[in-house]
Image (cartoon, rainbow, N blue to C red; front, side, top):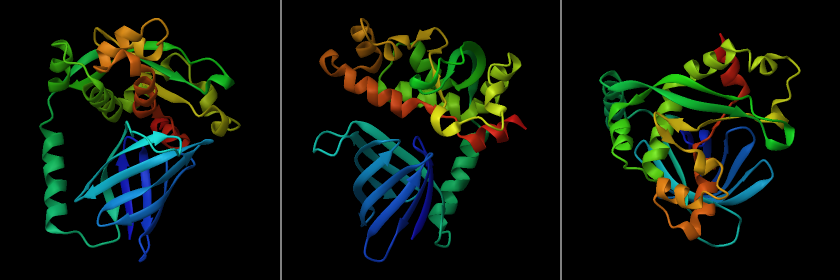
Length: 258
């Protein structure tokens, strides 16, 4: 069986043989290997010199699971979530109904415009960030209302960031291009493998997420934002940043420039 998922890990291509052995690729160079039985995957991931454990369940069109850094047993705090966009089997009525429901949801989606501070940066060892700008973006109204009420936690902030990135990527890229901040990415000799630029959201409206990205001395503030214990906040922040930053894939970027 072959599956293709789109989620917070980018696009995942998963292949399962008749013996239940599974392998997959995701993002740029990321790989999975493990076993798949009765809708459940257990295995390991590798990406850019890092490795860890992962487990997820596929139910209908949804993929839900968790991951952790390192191969030693332990709690898996990072989220792996996605929705199937293609598989080798013929569509079934349930799948078609889900697709129709998603289309209807997108049509009636209520959103509002806010100013959000956005940063595009490379790997730290290869240079400074491209700068931060307050860009006008759309965000789902129900999510924004939760944030205005102070209802922040890991899941709410993650969903808000996903919403901004999923629905405003063209706007974000265009905004940075106005100020010629990403011109080097258009160079034919740009080294995408080493730079691996990321996009991250630093503010959402008046909500300041900087304690998460600048943790030292702001552990308490970050714990309040993510609704986690201060003593464990370093691990939660590490997982959150990995979970909620958008890798600027070369092909995606070039497509958005057109």
